[in-house]
Length: 560
Image 1 (cartoon, rainbow, N blue to C red):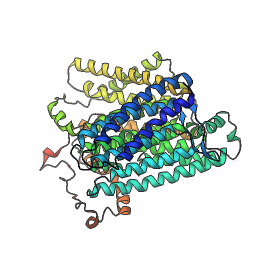
Image 2: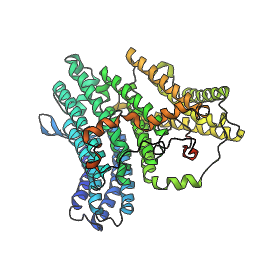
Image 3: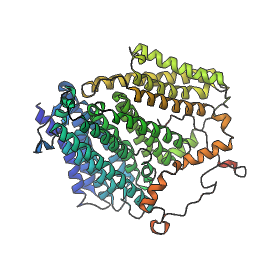
Image 4: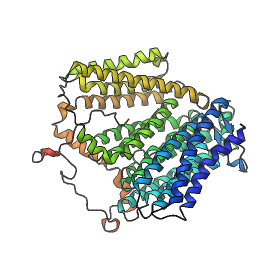
């Protein structure tokens, strides 16, 4: 099978989805039999293409097609382990979400139009991950935003959905402008839009010998584009408010389109690693957003709003890991988060019933410092044991050490609820086994991802002094928060922490500025109800209404 043939075969998938979108113009109503049949066939066909192309790329590493355009800017495809990994993930998610939409919108008078817009969005995302030239990558980047906007405003009679779409539109245009500037700088520096040529020149360390400012600024604007695209603080408010859209849109957005930010940084990892400021920006924005959104996640009474903050936190964590240079771990997290979040949104309607039917009486927490310390030491032992077994020395690479420290925090949060309680020893044993399995899964899959993407990513290097200080700050912030979560049983009755939780629940009001910008605070025009700032409205426990107390959540890093 020749390279041109496999490239043509892969290109058939977005073309087929585009045909589905065009067919919906002729069947926009409630019984779009042709659209449903063709879109169903396309999703299955795409999975087959992903399997065939994946096998081919494993044998040939990378395929770069010729550029169709002018002055080295235009349309071309790049098939390598990174693009095929993303393409395969999109193929599986597309199959699930399209099938779900058949039943979810069954009987809707505009089901055909919805499926058409959904297929157009999937086609745009596929082109984004397959792009081999700056021209096609920018075009598909903009198309993903436009196609998503058409899905967000599908029900134009829902004022809150329209307001959220307006804010998303503003953030998307800011991201588009940032990416455009970055690409102009890269083209001006390298004289080509071909990604393979750009990456090869950086690998050979030829292009960075002169006019370094262009590459430095390009890295900064790439980071800004990812921050805007992936709803990082303080630009995250629109993502929390798009829950008025149909559930398949939420699943596609949170499991697919938000990943464009981490994917962009990983795709241009050689550019980012050749700069000084871009990793710093990613660590600051990603690290803070991951912490902020994780805490806000724990305060939300609404399932979908909590899932929204969870996605913001995940994106922040991935961008921070990219800033640290641990790209294989970021891509592993991206794929795992995508499937988890797709399942979470598609099953969100039955979450309440599931929780009610599976209530488990947890043992009362003791708040014992020695037991909590035992949880941390046990988590550290599990992590170090697997590091030794896999031949990894975290002390040699500070970035790996920081990633490992965060893993230890997560494992300790799994162990603390059972160790710090008057529970059965069997429960402690089961939890320890579970933590061990989680660590084993992480090390195994991260090693596999590293092996798969090794040729497409720069080698891990020692961070400079600025990044070292930032790593220390992030770990200190996360560590204090985890300790606070462990001591939560003794802080539950504190009025001070209740007030702090109130502010986190409202996102520290960063979204209010954007609300004012788009006129969302003008209730007469937006149609939104008047805000209610009473304690009851925000579910703040009071002595008069003790039943309003929220159930405790066990892990501050659950959303990360």
